[in-house]
Length: 172
Image (tube, rainbow, N blue to C red):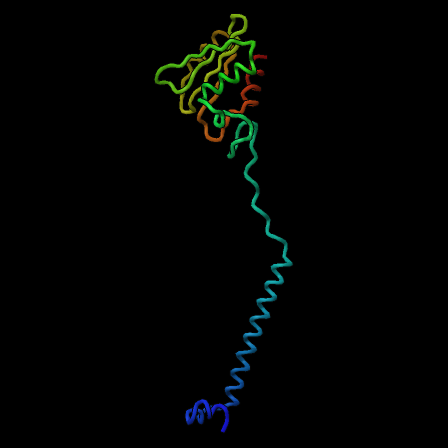
């Protein structure tokens, strides 16, 4: 009595062992072929050049970009944006007197910087959504240098070096 006969009893009489052996062999060969194919694909991936990494975030400028710069700016300063600019005027331009004007209902401020009693520069802090031109036009009519800093423009940080650089350039 063969193994299959012992396991299957009379049910194993109708099994063609040669045919079964061929089917098992074919299945084993198919499995081996698939394993070889998978190993070949893995080896090809390993030897292929690495895919190019995505480019880094867009470069930032002196005071703009997607990421907040490490440098002091109006958003990491421990105070309001008005206090930030007052701080810069006092520390970086001690020879100038800064007079502040804040109007009710106006999100921003106007600083008149004077040297020896004479207007040297007008700095306007305002929302980027504002279309006000009164201060700018008045400065142009008086021949006084004028600067505008937007306090809420996305991606613009008003870093200290940017602010002081613009002010120095405007003062000549």
